[in-house]
Length: 511
Image (cartoon, rainbow, N blue to C red; front, top):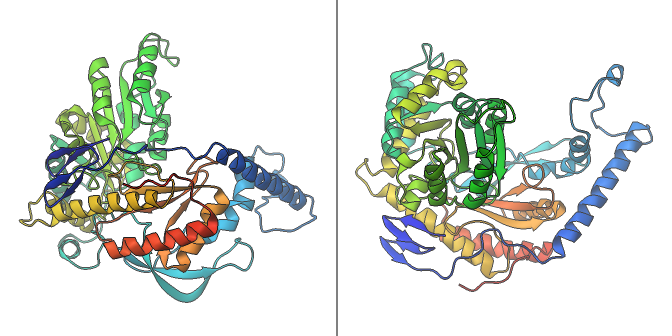
């Protein structure tokens, strides 16, 4: 898979100082391990679940006592609010790994971050602070472009906005919270995305979940990628539209599902669909894959559908000026009806945006629950976004933005190549800064994270329900602020921990 970087089309090529250097043959984005691995992982999780169910029964019978929430006995005949499987999993499997999740930070989440040290003396039911802190190399934060700093032009701009406008605008966009700074950032983002108009929202998750219901209804058809984010899934469900799921990043399967659906009627209305919305992501946050955007645009045009692109992880992270997958592939942004993105990751702020044709964005402003009921973004957060966008677009008069994009691209390609050379099984596109290293076993991913922390490296351990039950993984989020020295140290530690946990599931590739 290829795209464009620094204005030139590349096919898994490397770009440095404006020159394109071709790499070897593209690697498979989601390779499979040896055939027996999934069998062993299935056996492992089955034994853990059986043990968890036995522990739950013993607790219910009073033979053993745990800190598991049991509820009010007067409500024993009420219908349960939760899922019994998830409760058992959480109480007896997830609970024992609480030391590797939700780690509290006590500093700026840059390339280096401080963690508050914790320990448990009751098998993970509670965590206690030691009063000490540890500095670690940060591979967990979404600081792709390295804008997360406590000083510098972005921080200065945010501080100036606090002095000038304060913290809170005190209302929604449809009330008295529609501040001049919101109109300014709307225009800044629209120009950056190269679309007619844009509108910002105070929360990334709500940007999807609250706006999709404004775009489609029960008479509509949604075609959604199998691995779309929970915010998109929530938005689809709230909309009431009939939703069909297609194989991950497979435009041909999307077209087949669409063609079959158009031959019939909506199961919810009994009539022809009033509109069709295809929903995809730019970079998939758990796989590190980059969407095959040209193929989905072709399907959209062929069947006269609407295309919704979620660029939460791709805006800022790909493209020579960070404009996302449209720039990466060299596509016209106007071929994408809704360009959604978050401001929390590459731009180190908060909130999200919708971009597109002016009539579409005006419609969202009028009918979205987000603009009607949500309090608007805080002025200093807007200052952070505007300054970061000016830097990335080169309007600050410097080359800093372009160099950030090149550094992130170099880090992504180098780190992925070195992981594969060492025999790790890695998902995703060569150009993606989201790098999942597959451990498959939940037990291994937990231990992997613990041992990496001993090397003063903070990683994200991901398992069910964020991933399929049999596909646990360590996820690295690279940053333009990471140096080659950082990456080489991390690679040395990974080899040691990989040997200790036996997580070399890939085939060594010498590129």
